[in-house]
Amino acid sequence: MIEHQLDPTRRLLVTIAVMLAVLIQVLDTTIANVALPHMQASLGATQESVNWVLTSYIVAAAIAIPISGWLADKVGRKRLMVWAVIGFTIASFLCAIAQNLTEMVAFRIIQGITGAFLVPLAQATLFDINPPQRHAQAMALFGGGIMIGPILGPVLGGWLTDSFNWRWVFLVNLPIGAIATVMLLRYMPKSSLSQRKFDLFGFVLLGVGLGSLQLMLDRGQQLDWFESSEIWIEAGLSVAAFWMFIVHTVTARNTLFERSMFADRNFATGLFFMVVTGVLLLAGLALLPPLLQRLYGYSVLQSGILTSPRGVGTLISMLLAGRLVGMVDLRLLVALGLGLMGVSLQMMTHFAIDMGPGPIIWTGVIQGLGLGLMFVTVQSLAFATLAPQLRTNAAGLLNLSRNIGGSIGISLVASLLARNIQTAHADMASRISDQMLPAISTSVVQQLGLPAQTAVALINAEINRQAAFIAYLDDFYLMMWLTFAAIPLVLLLRPTKPPKPGELTVAIAD
Image (cartoon, rainbow, N blue to C red; front, side):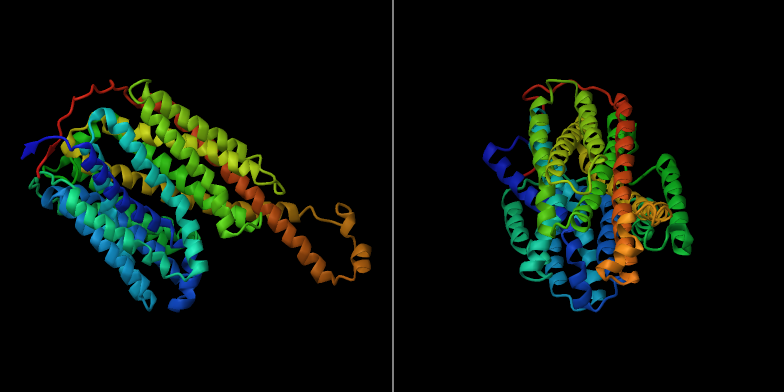
């Protein structure tokens, strides 16, 4: 082993390579969503069964992320990264040529497993090839890929599906994966190996817990939650497995994760804030595009364009946060980020059903500014006091926390949306009468020549539209209060001193 830092040119090339790998992974988390109806017809699947295309990927990724650190120590970060990109690219090609649902689900599982390693390995690599004074800028770049992927995914997926066919949603990964593989082989430095004993029992417990939790969250709304015996079984398995895993981690000698990570207050608090980030990022993206398409009449492409200012705000604030790290207390930036997100959600609760695109754009920019500030600063604080050898495991846990937060957020807002639509519809329908709506009285309907059933259907359709809009506003209202409630928890973070130039020497082996 020799100790040195990469020269600027090689560091840039490594950065490009790992960010290309991150790009294909985060895009595939959402890019396939808009293509599901086309897949359903092509693969001969039902509306319920085709959802396994998404569920299989999410569950496989959740189970695989926790072992990324152990595998990187065992075979080397470079070797694991290269094989993960190759595996993900091949799995993408297999998904594109799948002829039935069984093949598609099998190939998506391979995609989820290989893709799970890419994000934590890329994040740990960016930390190791940059000195401490550049960590915030590195996390700003990394966060840009993480945040922009879910925003661009549905837009790119919709355009590819409409312009070509759904198979191009997966074929688009091939050239990116090939370029990333070549660059990683050529420029990425090798890391030191560590022969840690694998905690098989802990991994099985965590895998059962995560898999059950993800299945419960993904299928809960579809199965009417705890009215279904499947959801009860998944909830019970998840609680039991997580409890046993915690006891095992506290008491066992060789564990999947080093206990010292959780003793670090900033890292432990950072895990919570990553859950909050996942809720706000993915739950917001799950709400806004359907609102724009169903109630405002925008196309998939138009709704993607209207949500893209959120990505612009994220990029601006990430660049700003990268410059401010070391100049101000990072806890203030986290609080400011949460405050901006809360303000944007408060503005969204005042949306009108007949408004133009202006409020959508401005609230997106403000929310993006908040997300970017929070993401960069939380990541910087979480890694600031961790030992370098713990970074891959820590990156895996932080990304797992964000994914779990996203799954919880999506399930929460989807369930509340469905229930609030029913509640609002019932409340408004009970108030409809000829006296309250003279404009559509029986005499007027007869003059227009409309059949009575048609008139009733028109009234019901408008009630449905208004009820859906009220339900969306209720979801925004809930997310706003959750965001503001998280601000006092910033005090749990411990401020860190800004690093001095030349403070770190990165240990890597050529």
